[in-house]
Length: 371
Ligand SMILES: [Zn+2]
Image (tube, rainbow, N blue to C red; front, side, top):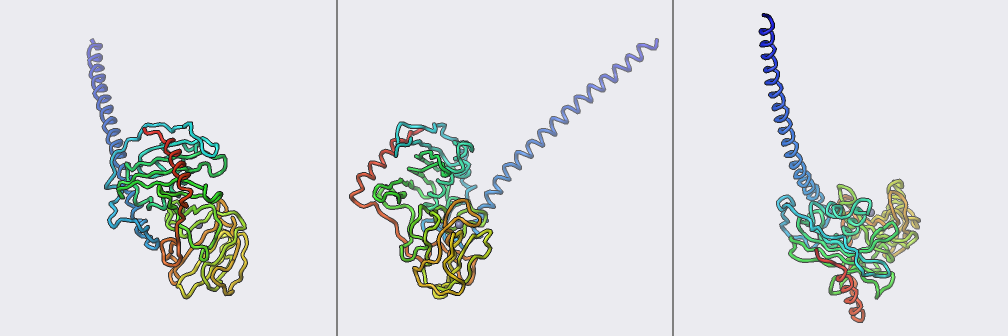
């Protein structure tokens, strides 16, 4: 007689347990969903926040001279973010060669940043960081890459892979900018001046500027690898211009002045010189030298050799770091190419080399496969 009651009782408990289990299950699912949604949403906010922050850091560094081409009202990056789909094309290896080495091409649209976009197409192991650094170096002559790139801008690159630490040689770059409403192009050419090649636009004008020889801190250099304001060199932006050059290349003071100090903070700067130019209201600094040829207090004439370039201090490769500071505010940095202190110019391909240049341009263009 006992049994039915007890079984009834048990049934009741089982029912209760089922109910409990179902409730707990639903509860877990709903909490999980909430947590997921919260996180997802936060993720988006973080992305936007970091973009805004970038824009802020940029506006704080007022010491950096804006490029001449900068438009007055550059819309903020987040305002123009649109979903961008990548052209699922080929990292094409074409039949073409230049200098005996295979030419490769890549085309893609910008998403988030140059580095992010390149690394979507080429893996880290295959050197996406190096390729994007090469591209950034060249593009810095066209625009402020942090401010002026837009999602959906398109980039064509023709390049070769190298065995050395450089990893890549860019032969052609073509960047279609929505902000500027134009396409920037750069073609590598060295036939008119062997061993001293450079990047030229389709009309044969060099992309990079050069300081006139009499005022230049260095006359023989391979290329300019970083300009003032370069954000790849830390959040404050780069304070100088880096000239990649072999160790032992003569370094000059472009202006007359007096040596203020030498070899301070050698761990970071390497051997270094600072020269005061009171008449101009500036100081010039020369870092990572292999040899200093002047002493503190020494008076120097314009164009006088003061040192040899090197690879000392915090540096990864031989180069001269040249910096122009305001005399009263050392945080105020001037670019040798956009400030009044230096005269600069661009090389032009001489007319009798135009045909060879056009031939080179068509060779590069033929390597590009449209997606
Ligand atoms: Zn530097």
